[in-house]
Length: 404
Image 1 (cartoon, one colour):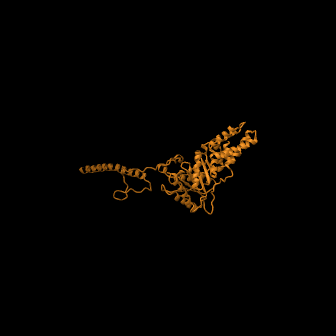
Image 2 (image 1 turned 60 degrees about the vertical axis):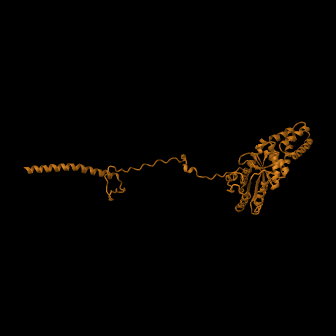
Image 3 (image 1 turned 90 degrees about the vertical axis):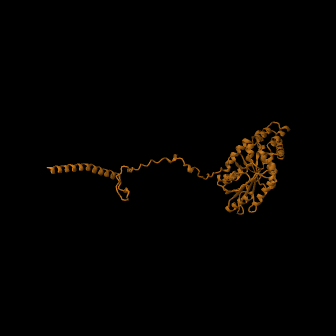
């Protein structure tokens, strides 16, 4: 009896133990299945602490997430450049200079607006029914105020007196035609106003640009480079103005705008003759058409500076002839420009005049005075601050602009 009870007790205990083990077994199997279902066949096995490959049933093991879908491509046209790209240096776009013909039309219109006092004043005086000595005195005064000069004024008045006496009665059309013809004679269309910019003897033409301080020499060189580029010339610039701060950089900027190289010194106060020499040397080596040398401004009464200008010219001539020496004058200075021109002509052989700021003065007669005094033609005129506001001088265009 006791043995039977003992057996029954063992069976009950065994069933209880089995009942406790079955849930644990099922829980472990379920956890294994869940872990396996989250792993891809290509996933690497998890390495246990001992280095063997084993499945780790750890509650803190992160389940790999599905990769997020890539965002839609943004519209790059609205994107801003990153800060680290903002400082990248970009080459300036090369400009296309305006054609010379277009400049002449534009400059004539500007000249007509700025110099009408001279032309209209003379036409009004000559159109009077009776021209007595008082009228001729007024005509002389008008010409002198326009900086035509004493000699050219008397020459023009004498010619007009003779023609008025012959005509007798005059219509407005006859007066304008008569005045136009006499003014053109005075400006002298027979003078050679062409620039010497043709290669010769297998060397480039060399041009020097001179003048006093503040007349716009460097700007004139830059504008003239544009004129020559528009005429399909291969140009090289020489920054021999080594005294004025940033003059070389200013010239180089003008050159970059039209794709023209500039020879300059990185040393402040360098010898201008040396820079000019190197520029001409580079021009010969590169077989360019024209080498343009920008010189420092100098007062005409400073003997040392004027002598230095002569030195620059002599140094250049050791390897090439100087074919063109352009004197830049500010038209608003009037008769003072004549004094400057005389001194520069004594130091270097001036071959042509560039009149700047002609649109800012009613004294267009300075053209006549300079040509009569020096026997040197006005070759270029500047009428404004624009890059293309420089054009070849034409006697008939100039007179027609004066008479509007």
